[in-house]
Image 1 (cartoon, rainbow, N blue to C red):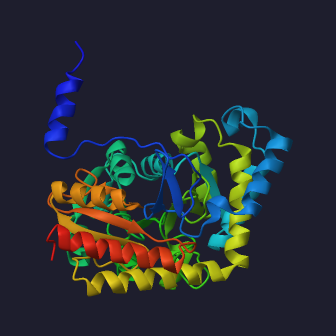
Image 2: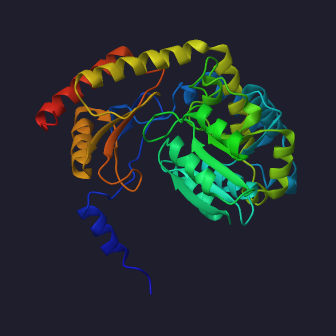
Image 3: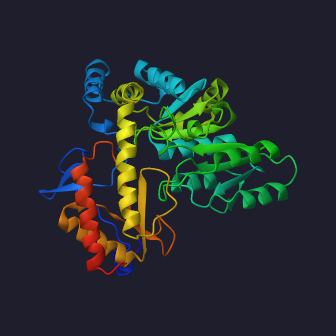
Length: 389
């Protein structure tokens, strides 16, 4: 007998937790069209506006004409197309490591990476706020999983000291946490890993293209040696395309080609996406002004939200979460903003912990100042109407 899906949906509705898809009738610009209405989008991870960059479009079109739409099969079956090889060379160069391996999505990258790195009898220590893909990947592995307090170096050290001597250990964290926008204390975490013989694995999905003097990510931001860690990331945030990657040593790449089920048993991503992503890496390096505009926009909006007295997280990135605690309040605020012409969906459990529902604003280099000023004035008006401060 099938589960009672209708009743399950009703229960979600009662708890203000039901989610519904909304059809966007335009491309991922700072202004989108939904149900015939134009709204300012403050929800995209297209941090540098590259999803609509003309050079990326041209690269994708050229690759489609040359290589077709699909890759045909997994790369170990039908071979590796030149755009995939080129992208991995470009990623390795950008991340300043020996090699990189690409996957279909960031989610499957984590599912393919973490279970490959550790054996049964090993130990995984993961930050409590790690992305769902990281937690699922840790559960998929046969090792023991323990969770440490968010950015809790002291708690992590206690867990490292309590483990059985010589136990194979992974410490897993995000570089920029996707729901809070804060940074992991990577120098401290790396030092603990080196002191205790553990391996640090970093999900830098929201750091790549954004953090560091050259946009290489949180490892560059903290001035760490990329050879000392295992890092993954996505191509779907600042890079503006789709997919995921692991960057590290040549031996790590070759090992994953032979050990990662998410790579071995999955059709390769479309070659046009790989070509567009390679072009995006060039643009990031050639147009540093995009990153400067992103941070200027971020700092303006962050300052205005602080003046309004909202409870924000300890964000240090272009992710600006306004914490309103209850799911009902988050929904009311999102609906009021939508009516005013601003798209900011409510983020509710289980995406975030209970009593931490929020509006998660994400900033783009392409947001115009007048758009951000309108967002500020509208949020201020709704704040008064809903008596949020």
